[in-house]
Structures are given as structure tokens and as C-alpha cells.
Length: 234
Image (cartoon, rainbow, N blue to C red; front, side, top):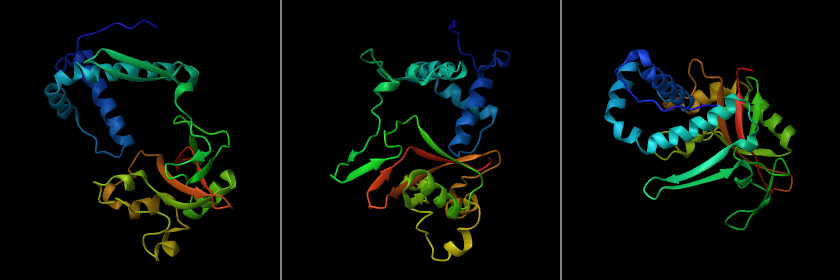
């Protein structure tokens, strides 16, 4: 793999620099449920933040792109790196995938014990994926079947955002007593649209949504799992 530097120029359409920025901007926006933007707006904003692009952002982007090349080349996860850097002090620290402190059974900050699924623990790289346009009832049943744990709380990550109008809103237990009869046997994505309507989380082209789960086993012990993803298009 040979990497060569190039000069960024936003006003020369033939170099495809803005095409790259525009496509990746909207790709990231779509992942996080943010409204997409047009090419002209991208150009205006890119022209306003040249100083940032040329310094810290350039460093972070370069490091991210190196990791992307590893994915495109189907490299083993052991080649991945987490990087901390500070331009002011010229400090760079690279941590391998094995150094990313896996979550294993133990006690939380308050001293309460917890276990993990899988039993050997997991890292930030792992995901627990559920396939199909499941209802809430089907999701809870499949979750318990796979992990041996009962879903005590279920919500979209946007509920953790204190600035969102949907902050603190749950899918389970339901926000309204009527929701169980109305939505528990309908596709979970419809229920997400109802509870988090203000955020417009489900839109054309989206096929997956992240979910936050709080679960416990038969003994009442908290069970921690990898990040949960629902692939409702499968």
C-alpha cells in the first residue's frame, strides 16, 4: 500500500475532493439520523474550516482512513489500532485491539456484581445482532433465548441525550400503558417511530438501528452484553 499526499482544493470539481467529502458527510449523517446536505453547503462549510481541516481534523481523518484500508483489505481485527494524539505536545499513542480493555464479569462502581454475555466477556468491537423485522415481543423472546437474560429495559441511544426531546423515553417498560396493546406485536421499528417521532430515526434507506438493553438473569444479577443492533431489513 503506497500513500501519497495531495493538496486539498474545494473549487476544482475534477479532483473529486468535494465529491469525497460530500459522500462521506452524508454517509455519516445517515448513520446518526442527521439530515443530509447538498454539495454547495459542503463547499461553503469546507471553506470556513480550512484551519481545522489542516490540523487536528487532518490527523484524525488520516488515522481513521488507515483503519478503513485495513477493513477494505479484510485484515484481521488484531491489526486494528486505537490512537490518542496531541499535536501541541507531538504525542501519539497506539493501542492494539488486544489492549482495549474487554468487559468481563465483575462489579460496577457501586460494588454491585454483574456477569457478561458471552461469559468470556466482550470488547467495543463486538455486536449482538438480531435479524428480521421483529416485534418487541419477538425481540425480547430472542434476546432471552440467546443470552439467558430477561430484558428489563429497552430504549434507543437517543434517550441518553439530555438535549433531545426524547431524553429518558423508553420502549420497555412502555411510556404509556396503551402501548403494550398497540405496539408489542407490531414491528419494533414502528414502535421506535412512535416513541421517538421527534427524532425521525427511521428513514428511507436505513436498514439497522442500535438499541440499548438493560437485562438480568434468573438470579436477578445484571447481564452486560455487546452493543445491540437490530437489522430489520434481513
